[in-house]
Length: 381
Image (cartoon, rainbow, N blue to C red; front, side, top):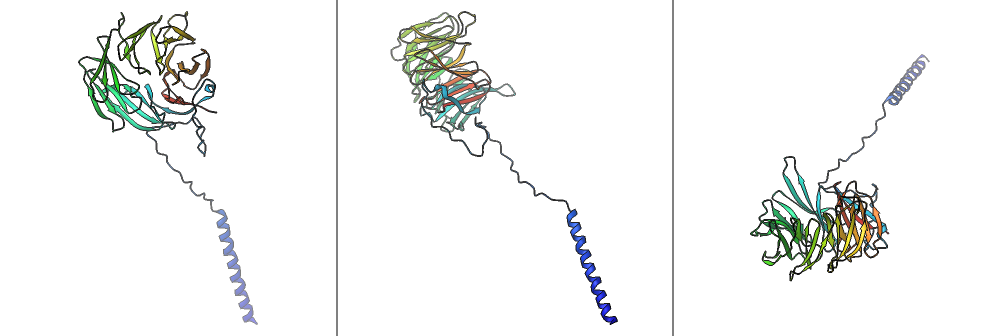
């Protein structure tokens, strides 16, 4: 009997210890701090060329509308479909197929050295397919196919033609017997017009072998020559001296009429067929106000006058000559060439628009401003 009582007492003592130990473990577990698993993070790599889309960040990439030709009717639907930061753009040049564009730049580094460059950008992504940078010569022009850049040496004694598709190799060097003022490619890229600094003279060179094709002279003015060379028309070169413009045929050297202005000409452009020229002057007085004049290239007659709120620093015709794009302040203006009506005025740039160009197929407009932004405009329907 006493033995059974002893066994029962030992059993109850063992049971109480087990229950107590279990309670202690549970209480300890409840007092442990809650641990949150660490969130996995990824450090982004910084791209060498940043492209900023106008669309808001989204998990899905919005589809880019199919490009259509910009017309009088749909120009009001132009919108910025992409943009990219590019410092101090001097020129915009579209490739003939509209699949890329090239921009030339001029910058100064911390030591004061001038840096000249060309970037070829794919469209519509505006991602770089080729970049060239040099301190040895300024970029005078880019060929319409986006494959060649003409560099004038800093001492103005030579022109180098750089192949942008072959590792920026110099394919040809032209060394005239005069100091070079400017150089421009013909629309087909087969000829380079080189102006002389101290004489009213333009020499045409073949871009394939550097041989002289023709020499154009005969332009006369009391003012120093600002520039002379090709525009969008393969038929003419344009002489520009202060308030005067004059066309000269490249084959026979015949001159068109003199186009006289009341003030300094700040921008001009020709239609692709050479039939019309548009020019802008930097009007100093209040009357007459800023305006772009549309000229009959062959006859020298004024066809239209487009009144502006401030001078346009850049002008371009659409490929078919029906639209005129102007950079007026920070706005892109599209005008109807036939009616003379302002079709649309588009904001977006944070500074003066300094360069613009229609694509060769008329489906895009590229603009650049002193806000160091390149905008790509397209009709959004």
